[in-house]
Length: 362
Image (cartoon, rainbow, N blue to C red; front, side, top):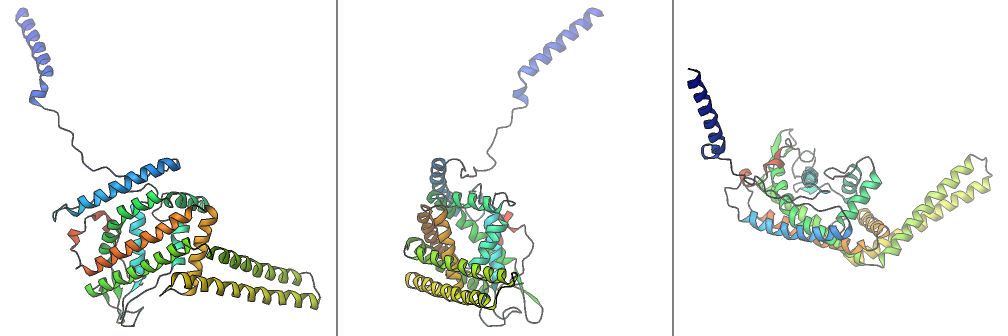
């Protein structure tokens, strides 16, 4: 009996060893498959590294866009290339913000028959240069964050990459946002965006982007405007110093003559500032031939571009390029406005629709 048990144990051990050696014949290993295409990154290393990566990314983004365009009607998602500083969230936030700034005609906030944009460049700069939504920077360090963003973005290859990679994302995000947005009628009733309003909004946006792009590109290339901006900023500071001197005198029980002189200085500096402002504005109008933008926006843009030049004189080439790419983006938006509204299942990035329904103009 003991001999039989010993034989059974030996057979069991031998059988177990044979099974372990041949287990893949019965339970083959699963074949590894790629579950998601590569997500392109723009490096934040040295300048030379950034240029190399940006060139590769721009090419890859163009190829990716071509592949996506031929993916077929049954496609459910585009894996848009991404940038490590300017994330997809930024594009989504910009599109949502633009939709909210659109006021359709015949609504509670815009009773006029035609729609309009309640949008200006200063509000955009404050939003994205102070709060940094969708930008991968330290939001508690405003100056440091702005420096990181500008040094990263204002490179030719990076701009090319972002234009190629993010224009389709921007257009699809706009479409999804418009289809989920509502506005308030004079009666208080909520209404969805109509097809006519959708085309109007995209057309107005295209015109705005085209105008801003043209002005940015022109001002960045026109060196004669920069000393006019510098003079205007100096005169603004003179007005501030004149006011400060006047109020300091009030606390010192100054004589009437001294107070009158300080008051006269305020008036003189204000007049000088306004002369500088008019000269600057005239130069901008002569160079860029702006239409549809008020004087305050033009002056603000000129100051913004001037500051970029102070931080890095070489960046003016990239600023001009940004203006040119903005014009190309406007052409893409205008082309989309001529196309019929896509069905929701044709918008190839469902992750962009996670936000709740927006109210236009509220």
